[in-house]
Structure formats: C-alpha cells, structure tokens
Image 1 (tube, each protein chain N blue to C red):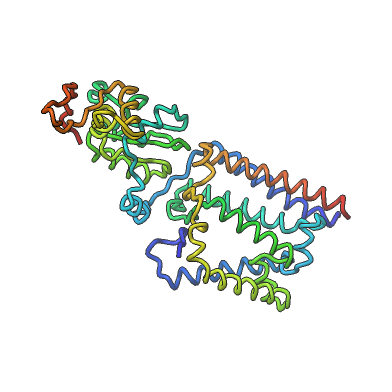
Image 2 (image 1 turned 90 degrees about the horizontal axis):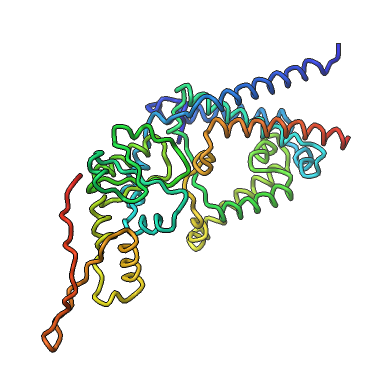
Length: 192
Length: 199
C-alpha cells in the first residue's frame, strides 16, 4: 500500500485507517454532488447535466496542483508515488468496455458504490455486476496474459513522453480544465 | 443581494487561485524524487532491462535516430582519444546537470562499471529512458569496429557486422578458415583485437 504523504515507517494499520478516512470523505463528497444518482450521470452523455465532468475535472486539477506543489516544496516525495504502467491496446480495450458499461448502467465503479451505499438498487446491481465481472476475468487471465501485457510502454508520464517540463504540463491541463468548465456551463445553459 | 453572487465569487476565486498556481508551476522547475525505488531498480538490473548491446547502438546511430542521446562518462582525455560517434562527454561528477527529456539516453564508460553507476544515478534522479552499454567502449570496439566474421561473410548477421564496421571506420576480423585438403589457408589479413582496459 502506498501512502506517500505519510512517513515510510508508518504502520500498515495507520496507513489503512488513513485510506479509510480519505475514502469516506471521497464517498461523502460524491454523494453530496449527486453522483450516486444514475440519472444525473447519464445526463453527461446527453449533455444536459455536466456535473460529472465538472466534479471529476475539479478533482483532477486539485490533485494535479497538490502533487506538483507538495513535490516541488519537498513535502511530498514524488519518488514514492505509484505510477501504473501503460499497456496501450489492453487499456484502450478496457476503456471501451468501461465506457459501454458506464453508459448502459448509468454508473461507474466509484459512483456505483456510492449509489449502493445510499440504498439504491441500481447501485447494488452495478456493484454485483462489477464483482462478477472481476471474478470471471480471473478465470481467463492466464490465456489472456499475452494480450493483457502487450504494447507495454512502461510507467511513463506526459513529461517523459513529450519532453515538456512538468510545470508547463500542469499549466496546460489547468487551462484546459478552466476552459472546459466555461464551455460546460454554456452547454448546460443552452440545453435548459 | 443576488443569492447567486457568493457562489459565483467562490467559484471565481477558486478559478483564479488554480490559474495562478498553474502559472507559477510553469516557472517553478521540476519536483524531484527524494527517495529511490530500490526494488524497481534492482528488478530492472536483474532482468538486464538496463542494458543495450553495442550492435543495437550502432544501428540506432546509423539510422540517425533523432531521439537518441549517447553520453560518455569517461575522463576528458579518454573521450578525446576516441569516442562513439555522436557521443557527448559528461563525466560522472557532472551527471546531475543532465536535463530530463523524452530522448533515449545511452551511457557508456571504458568497461562498464562507471556506465552502470551512471545509470543508477540518472534513474534515481527520475530519468526514465536510460540504458547502459554494458561492455562500454571495449564492447563497441570488439563488436562494432572489429567484429569477428566468417571468411565469406555469408548471412545477414555477418553482412550487417561488416557493414557497421566499415560505416564506423573499423575493420572486421576474419574468423580463421579451417585448413582444406590442399593444406592451404586464407592469407587474408586480420586486424589485431584491441587490449581491454578501463573501468
């Protein structure tokens, strides 16, 4: 388990409790934003309610600025951040399956947990489906391993691939987000 | 008072704060890791994922690969005497000055020890695409400049070895031909293999 903001000697119990606290805060925030409601999420695909885009992109910008500045000031050891590997084709395929599931169920994995915790039956069904899918793919992971591990690009970041400094990437993404929020507000205003 | 105003002010304030922090980030320089993922480095070393052989490097140089950067970490005098074509000189003590980039960086030294140490240093500094010519300039000399090829240089591998040797100004070494029935043997001259030295 990685907990880069905590001391490397922190016990597993404390690390797990920290993760639990963060998870509770995250779930509460999602529920308060209304993202436990499938109708609100599906509005994203119909461009009538872009709350999902605004909430998720706000979270991305917060994390991006937080990680950059905490790392730059030496309060966060960026070397301890977990960087998942890029497997181009498998991840594109997984993204496609994820997108279809999201559109069909109206919920993504995180919001399905929020919906289930709120007592919504569709949330419970989505969580059960996700668990069943994960369990099923486990049976086929060996024959699929060649595909699963294909087109590896290593654990790379945008600065690694483009040669553009991290700070400039941060500026570009934040600018894109702020512009995106403006456009989202305009789209929603036109639809209502 | 307009009820939407406080909400709008909060959003505008947050947007201004985010934009300001992002603008400063573009000028602030890079966050650097303060600890090294020793396990990850050890795994790469164990699987030899950090290595690249001299023939591959020669192919990259010959194909004029634009994202290739070759760094010679030996002493200046050794670099001046001979270095791999297109290599830049950057001794170990100045290695921290190397900027991170998306280029593939190949490090080499005389034999391989300093090159391998340089690899660990650059990976610890967060450089991603770094490889080491494990046998150093010695491997370059024996595998690229003076490769051993069969007498008739038959086969694509031998042909490529001769081609690379000639391209980089070397001389292939001909594998001794077995004595035939007439008792004769090829009189073709052979280059003398260089003496291995360096660290």
